[in-house]
Image 1 (cartoon, rainbow, N blue to C red):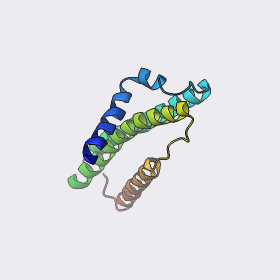
Image 2 (cartoon, rainbow, N blue to C red):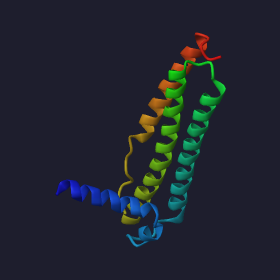
Image 3 (cartoon, rainbow, N blue to C red):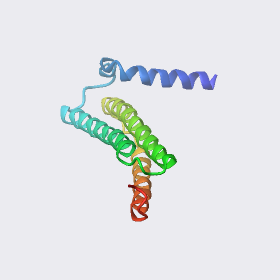
Image 4 (cartoon, rainbow, N blue to C red):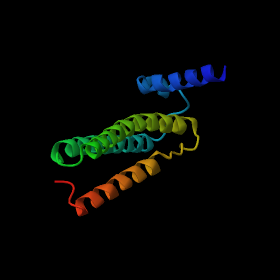
Length: 136
C-alpha cells in the first residue's frame, strides 16, 4: 500500500512537469518577479546540464590517449550528471512554483552540494592526470 501511494505521488509529480497549467490551479498567483526568478534559476540549471554534456563529449573526443576505462568513466559521469541536472531543474522548478503558490517555504535540495562535490572530484582527478602527463 505504501509503495503504491509513493508511486502515485511520483506519477502525479511527473505529470505536472508536462502540464504547467495544472500548477496554476493551486493557491494564489505569486508576485511575477518570483516566478520569473524561478524560471531564470531553471534555465541556469539547464545551462549547467548542457555544459556537463558538452564536457562529456569533449573528454570522449579530445582525450583519445587517456586510458580507455578512465575516458569512458569520465565521459559517462559527465553525461549522466548533465541528464540529472536537467531533470532536477524541471523538478525543482515545479516544486518551487507550487510552494510559492501555496505560500509555503521553498523546498530545500541537496542536489547542488552533490553536483558541486562530483564536479570537484572529477576536476581534481583531471588535474592529477594532467600533472602525470596521462592526458595526451
